[in-house]
Image 1 (cartoon, rainbow, N blue to C red):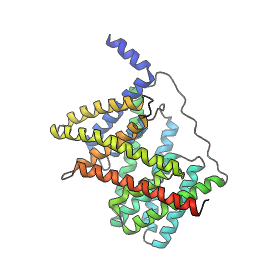
Image 2 (cartoon, rainbow, N blue to C red):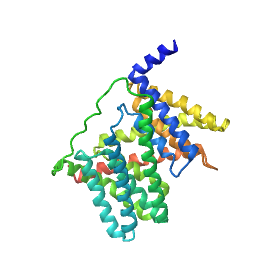
Image 3 (cartoon, rainbow, N blue to C red):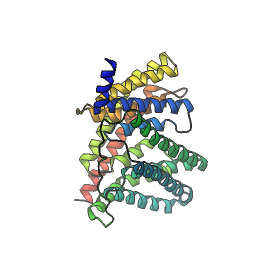
Image 4 (cartoon, one colour):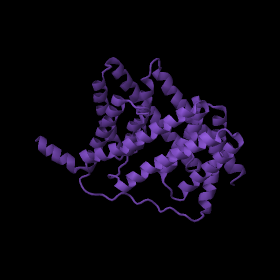
Length: 339
């Protein structure tokens, strides 16, 4: 009976994706918190983000490309932070140009992964380098190391729970090397929204509100008012959903503060979330981002003298602030500059 059940499970695509998601996330957390290298918590977050997508195993070429893209993105961010930050006016001018070219690159069919990594690097590293250059280098090394380990974890999860049959990886749109006027216009709108808040936050070192800047830059990847509001709303609802489960998860591990119990609860939770993510319902997209919110909120609450409710409330308020900012900025830009 058990052999028949396993055979049926391995023959079902959705079941394999659920098991792969639960195994990958749980094993990634076991390694991350068991070894606990700098920025180790990023590996489970990246693993959950990738395994929540209904995609086949990435090719070796695609995996190597993502590894090199991450390394190049943080090399760019470090160069940007360590050499230009000491010249404020030149730095702000170059920041605007870099943001524009990243948005332009994405709108011409460029790599989303490279764009996302570059955005994180050029926005976070200057904030860290403002206090200490060594911390910026350490952050970059930890980030790249965790992202590379994530790729290894994805391969392991696909090896243990492979797809029942070979499926072709989706062919992404071809990158357009020629000038594209529409892409340039969209990039300009995105830059006009993201640059002012990035310039103010980095100049004045507002690290406590870093997420507002990051979310604003990401929500405006597609500078459409409807899409920006939709991205913000999805992120807010996902955070609230993940926050409810994170609250239950947090108090369970407080009641039984054992590492093996933490992994058991995580396995059960990831199985439930995986089932919802791959159910194909209208709520699936919220569960996907909600699980990442759960990991981030619970990880933030593990430090000494932290308040879980305050962390969750702060995250919701920061996302709400980012939504309000991009909606207001887009309305002003579209009314007065892009009629």
